[in-house]
Length: 61
Image 1 (tube, rainbow, N blue to C red):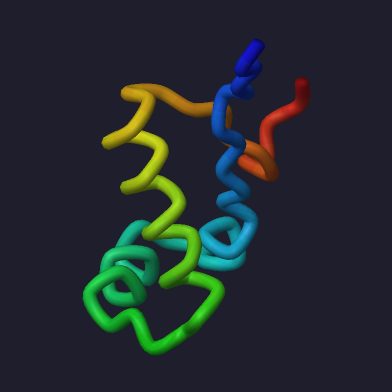
Image 2 (cartoon, rainbow, N blue to C red):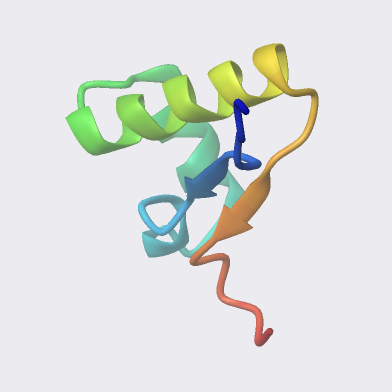
């Protein structure tokens, strides 16, 4: 039996920015490898599954 798990995307790297403007600027200039990996993880999860669990979002469980 093939058991698959809902993708978990860690967005902790995005939580280091304090404003939306900083996030937008970082997303436009993806020189940071961790940020690029997060973007790729979100894209893959959304494309392959259509939904995903977000980890390290800064909100209490």
